[in-house]
Image 1: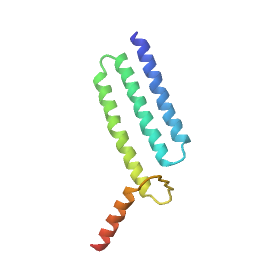
Image 2 (image 1 turned 30 degrees about the vertical axis):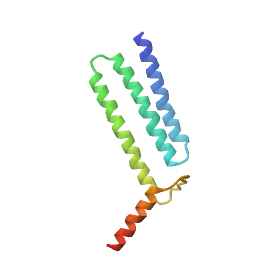
Image 3 (image 1 turned 90 degrees about the vertical axis):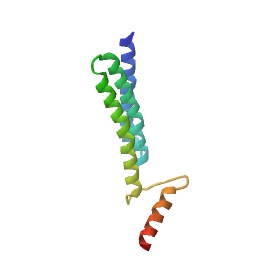
Image 4 (image 1 turned 180 degrees about the horizontal axis):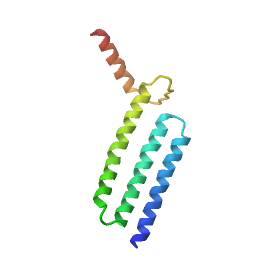
Length: 115
């Protein structure tokens, strides 16, 4: 019974990681690619970690640490990539809502000019 659960979790995790890779290749802008690279791959790696934790007895603490590390670093890296892409020149950004970050950046630039 555990072998079936391990197999299903491993297949589901592998499918999500492959879909994340396809999303990075197929999506058009940096934000959609960033979303595909972080959301699907993080969930896929978590499912693979659960599957390997069930299959392996002695390596569970290492697996938990590895999955926790990925859960911490992937969103942080995506945040930094998003901010860098926002501030970079030559990248077209089409926002459909209010842009609060632009107002904050403009306010910092104006304040620096006054000082």
